Length: 520
Image 1 (tube, rainbow, N blue to C red):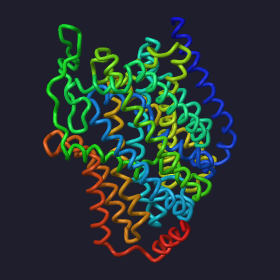
Image 2 (cartoon, one colour):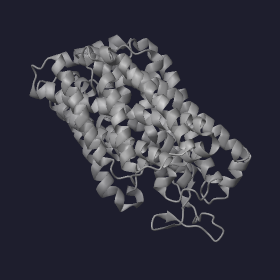
Image 3 (cartoon, rainbow, N blue to C red):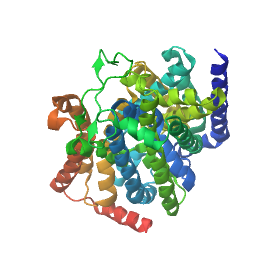
């Protein structure tokens, strides 16, 4: 390891030590009960709720995946995705957060998303809970794998060590501190990581603009690439065997710009729909100590999201201007933030800035592992297999499950050529379509029935796979992000199945009205 690599390593180690200390600080309290371990005893303040929700949501995708898309394709794909995400963030906090906080407390003091759905419909046979838990296990295993890919790529790029070794090392670190600290450690560290992420993005963006010669120079150079700096066009790198080609002067080649029409824009904006079904965000809504504090949380979250998304997109654009031929594959393009950090700053400072990537990845991976583990231990093991299990047994099973899911995610992450953006987009669609429509209907339409809930979840979850694997490859009008058609069909399934079955029992309707009164 060179001197520069050693300095970067030292900076990142200091960050890792800080995160471990947070886990150790909360270890005793988290071990007191499964409620403390899984939802922190509903004790989060507004700042930790807001920053924790956004940091756990964005993950390493924000610092690697999104800048990579902007570097490779230009402005349109990245900016329309960001607009959809920003709108989804605000609307989710505005409409869902407060109602879910109250309803989850009234509905049997639910501490997981499957618990809430099951208790919402007062089901005796835990079909809704089982389906929800299984989908969480499937999609969060993929999500956690994307985080491990990010860590493996980060460390292997910096230290020139084999990807697989670095991926496993990063995964083991996340597993360790999540295992001992639970939800409280995850939420507290997410707050710190959210701060580091936005500072890292802002610093790299500022230095990048200066290095590129100012905003006007960035815009002028970006416009020289066909379709690169347009809202309604997209650049087309000239490829051969998956590598962008260079001209005789060593400059990257681009073909004529491709169109970016209304269908594509609507498809990309639909990323915002995913927020209504994201367990890691919804769980933060349920965990805040006082629903009246959610207004402050909403403002914090929206501002953080706006700054972070703008910075991430512009880093990709500026990176292409400054280092046009440095990253010639779509996979390597996702390392533009790392490249700029190491080129712009002294090693110690670069290590601190790149801790932003580590922060983003850890803040998401811990959430994914914890929610996945709770889906099995609390909802399947305790809810179905061993209903008489005491709280300590459930807590122990949660930790065992966390280890098993981590191993599965590590196996998925063995493919170092995975494109982070694509992996995340699939899991995002899965949660958005499976849980999003049902969450909205459960909170705001009392005529929703248990049959409607089951139909909606199955339709949304299955359609994500069908559209992604069978329909979207047909191209043309069918080339739509799978979240949009799956979300719409899930909504239709809920409405149709609810009207075809008799209205919910009186106690379910009374609970719905009580939740409305609780909110008020």
